[in-house]
Image 1 (cartoon, rainbow, N blue to C red):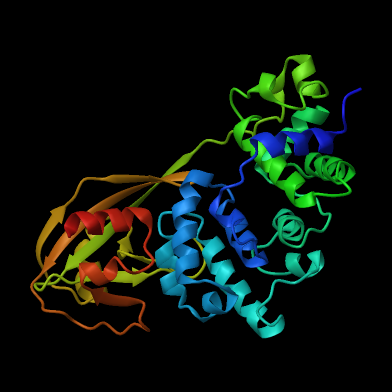
Image 2: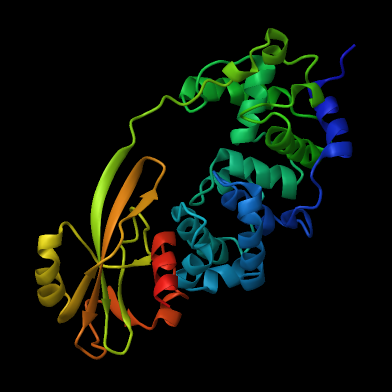
Length: 347
């Protein structure tokens, strides 16, 4: 007789599961929360150095709440999906003010916090509080869809609801933390999106997708959309002393809250934009090589213009939206990855 789902998973985890990830040492609700947010749509290998830097700088919720958002975004630069960092800061401040700087012990209270959905809340409850709650991140969706033979794209509500019901029905009576980690590990290392290692999987005797010989069909892939290409232009103004002019982007939207180069729609606006709006007197204008930056839903083609100004440092007071920085100081700010790369080249 085939052992129950949870028993097979936990037995596999005891031998093959990951037990030495940085957030698995000194497990606290704060560490689980931070790692789960960083791991959203991001691979473990990418997250590890960011996580280590983050907890070194912000060792607990109080330290995170007290930090400047600019400093948090600076540490986050390159990890992408910057709304995650902004929500971490918002939530830390709520926890300090309303929860004595502690993560709530209730899943409903967790889900009410910015940036924490049902799956992240379930992970905090299971991994940190050892309470029986399911999770449904990308890896677990794939494992359960294949195991139960659930077709359809998990991003569709009816499919997701089916998977939640299955996840709830399979919960064990004990060792919930190990069980939860086992699901994530199995999805990441065995039940992979492409070329799953089915012969090494502890669930293969019961897995419907494997028994049908159609693991590649479960779960159904997200419907493809045509990736649009957008255009923008950067004004990279550099004063005679080498300072660079940067603009802080609005809190919401692309690169929200990060510092970037001022943007304009087309090259004909360059002179007006630099002289009238930013009070920069161009001495020499050099068009740079175009940059393509890929987002999830579109690609952005950026044409940079390096403008050498005849001015010495000019303080611009537009509610601190624009300001001049040395390149060294600029690299300490929260910057989009292509901005940081360009500044590094300039340096």
